Amino acid sequence: MIIVMKNQFSSERIFLIGYMGSGKSTVGALLAEHLGFHFIDTDVAISQLQGNSVAEIFSQDGEDHFRSRESAFLKFVTELDQVVIATGGGMVMSPDNVNAMLNTGLTIFLDCEPQILKSRISQSSINRPLHNDSKEDLLSAITQKLEVRRQYYREAHMIIQNNSSNPYKALEQIMARQ
Image: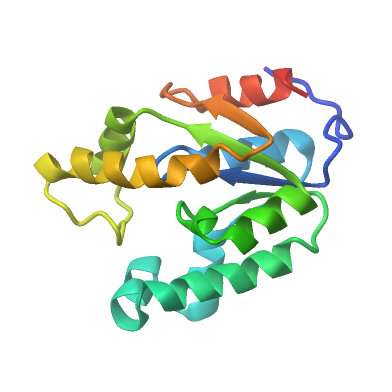
């Protein structure tokens, strides 16, 4: 069991970034609970606000529409305090989004190996709109997208390896670095 002082983090706003399946939602919920902060998953919140799943938004309105909703929602959450925010995997593709996160809170990149991501995505019941690839092509698609995004993810204030199936290990790494 980890015991955390509520004011241990210097930031009142913590952003978790990383590829889909990297554990942002799971680790984020645990981190928020330990800090006594609120937890927001941007994909879940946007889905609730739009009345459709992320996959349906992508299908009906396109990725550009989703990304604009994502950027607008990010502007909203940058005004909140005592919150852990799990972002969508593509949130970092907008330089404005990256700057907003870096300038308004602590940004943590949950880094995972492509093979681990493939396993997590394959086992997930969540419909991932950018990964409708066959199981054979999934690793290649993840590797290609991750290579493009990793340069943006690495701008984070903190990089945590999250290849373990135990999310408490990532939580312990985050707490140890504060």
